Length: 183
Ligand SMILES: *[C@@H]1O[C@H](CO)[C@@H](O)[C@H](O)[C@H]1NC(C)=O
Image (tube, rainbow, N blue to C red; front, side, top):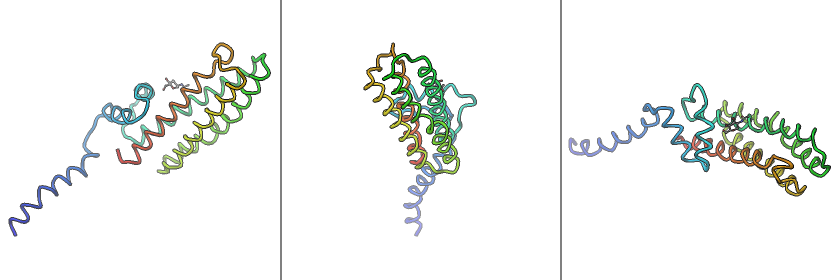
């Protein structure tokens, strides 16, 4: 009897430590590092999260912070599209921009704010779906801009912003995946 309990106790101790691990203090910086390394755009992820004050303390707050960065950038891009429309002299470009505004608007006003709220309730699958959709909308916008022949940054300087939005969505989705995997 003594022998068998001596044999079983080391594995249960390591199991205990394994279960405890997520609760052991990890500094927020280390956590951001770990999470950003799992995303496709490490530098962008770090740049988005390092500037926040106070620093988000856990994976869940990092994920909603990242969704807020997406929202901020898309809101900014929508405003920018609207100002380009006001100053456009080129009808095909203007039509493409109007299509962009039409798909960005509901994403910024309703979808992403809803996704951020849903994350608060633990509905991470829904949030991932919304961010994936936001990414598709920025893709569509870019295609319209390209086919209007307006992808030259000097005529419609939107390409870089669409790309940033797209990459930020990738980062946010990947952070939510980390969260769902219990990292
Ligand atoms: C857009 O994202 C970049 C990278 O995270 C960030 O530096 C910038 O402040 C964001 N812009 C807005 C308007 O949120």
